[in-house]
Image (cartoon, rainbow, N blue to C red; front, top):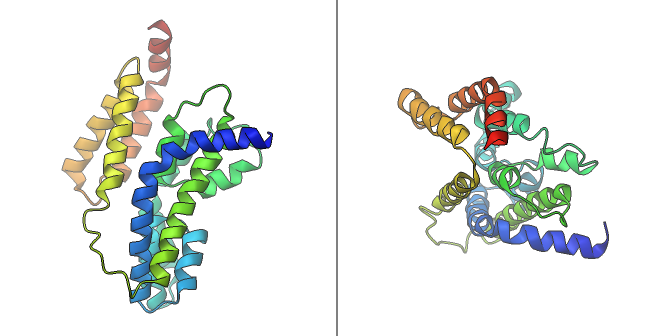
Length: 235
């Protein structure tokens, strides 16, 4: 791709990430402040935000570093917290085909927000989809690293109240879901997702419903994949 193509792709990707810019910057600052409060030097928060880049797990990692050395416990805890990414990866297999060397970074940098944008965005023919996903992922990580850097460097000086700020991410997912709903020819997959989530929320509660819901959604969509595809072609 030429430089102009890269600039054009970046310009197309940036507006998609603006809500995440707002959320990640302030949440990253909160993380940096948290690490500062635990007594860590700024380099810890900066490197962890670059190398781990796993939101909630980074907060947990701060307390793990202060506890007894137990790599098996840390591994199992990380697996439980981020197990949903197993399902993200399965659903992105087709999307990541043909992305070449970018694929490694797309896998590494895939977070909830990048997954939502990259899995639902429809790029025009003039935009290379692989580079679009790359820039979305890169921008989102830059937002998070920038916030963590600011928070860790100026932790003792930042005192604003960030309560409720995480609702920015919830609002983003709702808007994207509604946009996807309006684009669908039928709503079978969306209804399965809603039904499975509500059912698991009732059964497992707010802390543990995500993984069972994703498992049910994956099973049902796999079973009726041919029916959904056939129905879309007919309609």
